Amino acid sequence: MLINPFALLSFALRAAFDSASSSCEKSLPVGGQAVIEGVIMKGPSHWGMAVRKPEGDIFRDRWSCAGWDKKGIWSRPVLRGVATMAEMMREGFRALSRSAQIALGEEEELTTKDLVISVLVSIVAVVGLFVALPLWIGDLFGRWFDLGHLGRHAVEGLARGLVFVAYVGCIGLWKDIREVLMYHGAEHKTINAFEGGSPMTVKRIRSYSRIHPRCGTSFLMVVVVVSIVVFSLAGGGGVLWRIGSRVVLLPLVVGLSYEIIRASSKWGSLGRSIMAPALSLQYLTTRVPSGAQIEVALRALESALNVKFTPDTPGRSVYGESRL
Image 1 (tube, rainbow, N blue to C red):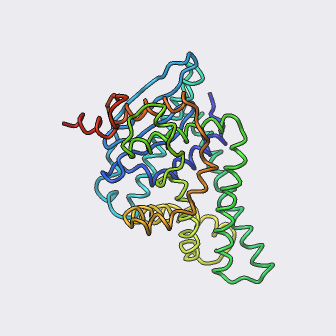
Image 2: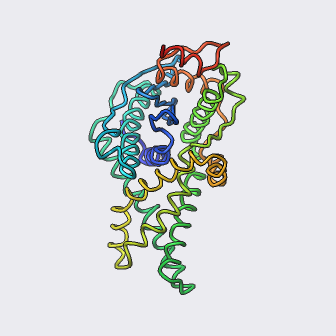
Image 3: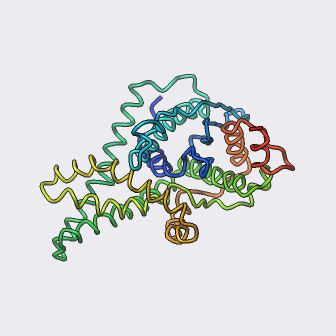
C-alpha cells in the first residue's frame, strides 16, 4: 500500500501548521489532526485516535505522549516549536498509516519503503511549490519592478502564502481530501464544544463553529512574515544557495512563529485581533462535517482524555471529575 504523495503532502502541511495548537500545556489542553476517515486528538498526557471502519463501527486507540519534546533543550524557546512540530509529524504519520489500513479495510501494512517513497516525493513537492516557486516569483517581480533586497523577499513571502492558499483550494476539490477537511471541521467543532463547557453530544457539538482560534492554519500568516525577515538574513547568492538556505532556516522560522503564536494566546483581545485575519483561511482548510464525522471526533477526544462523556454534563466537568 502506497499513500498518495499529494495526500501525504497535504497532511504534512496540516501537521506542521497544527503544531502550534497541540501543546500539552494546561492553557492549551487539547489539539488534534484529521486523518483518513478519522481524527487524532492530543490531551495532556495521551493521544487518542478514532477511525470509521468500512463496516460502520468506530475503531479507537490510545497511546502516551512521547514526552521527549518537553525535556532538556527541547523545552527552550524556539527549539520547543521545532520539537512540537516534529512530534506532531511523527505521531501524525503513524496515525495516518494506521487510519489508512483501518478505513480501507486492508490487512497490508505500510512498509518502510512505501513511507520513504511517499515522504521523498512530498519533500520534493514542498521544496518545489513552497520554496523554489516563490523564490522564482520574487526574482521575477524584482527584475520587472527593480525591487531591492527586502522587496524581493516580501514578494517571495507573499507568493508563498498565495501558493499555499491556491494549493489548499485546489486539493479541496478532490473527494478524498474533502473528506479529510470535513473531519478537520469535526475536530474543531468538538474542541470548541469541550472548551466552551458544553455537554458533549453530537447535536450540541454540531451547533459550534468549525473555526477555531488556535488552529494551525493561522500559523501561515505568521510564517510568511517571519520567513521574510529570516530568509533575508541569508543574503543573496545563486539559486541553489538560496533554496538550500531556506530549507536549512525553515526550522528557525517554525520555532519563531511558534513563539509568536504562544505569545499572542496570552495577549487577550490584542492577540485575537492580530490573528483575526488568519481565521478566514480556515474556510479553506475545513468543511462542515456530518453527524457521523462529529461522532468520530468525539470518540477520539474521549480516548485522548480517557473519559466517557455523558449527555447531561459539560465535557470539562466530566474530565475534571475523572482526575479526582
